[in-house]
Amino acid sequence: NDTATTEIYTLEFVGSVRMCIRDRLINDFVLNVIRSKTDVVATADSTPIVIMAAFNNHALFNKIILVSPLSVEDALKGPDNLSGIRRHILNVPVIGTSVYNILFNRPSLRKLLSKNFIDGRIPADYINACHENAHLGDASAKYLFISTECNFTTVTISKALSELDNCIYMINGMHNNNDVIDEYIHINPAIENVMIQDAKKLPQVEQPAEFVRQAEIFLN
Image 1: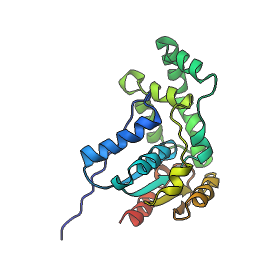
Image 2: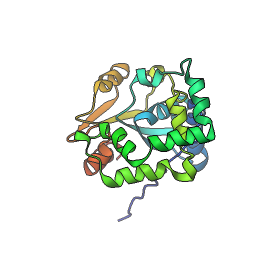
Image 3: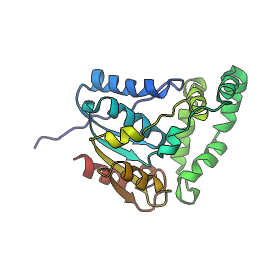
Image 4: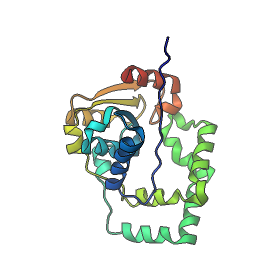
């Protein structure tokens, strides 16, 4: 029997790139690298980027999985009057890097990420991976932090969500705040949803086997 193979790509964006550029980068990647209609999986803050990419060129995408997606309200939050000042301060090399290193050392990461897991139980290898990724390239990831902290990566997704005709599947942890599920299904009743037991905001980390099983059911 022929064995089917699946190619998996993971994209990483420059932190200072605005949302409108990021969705174009995704579409360009699918068009020029993958070169075929593709399925896509996005988690939390990344979900608005995928929603807008599919809305702007739905022909590039097949099925879409949104894991613990960002609420429409949170996706809409834009820069306030102080955002420019905060971004300027955080971009100062010594000050910005020092603040970033304090916020993204292991104890701070553990505290920050604990709210995403049941009872704050975080796998040690996940903490190590997050810490390593946060400090790759001499902490160049701080520019992503600056952009998100100052709300320069937000976008209005309600119109796009309502008009998408791609197959959309949400995967959420049973212990997450799941008001977003009702919000998304109200906007687009065709969206499907599945809940994973004993998981909160990152079911792919807390219950990886069940997450893969549910993803395969939808994608196959």
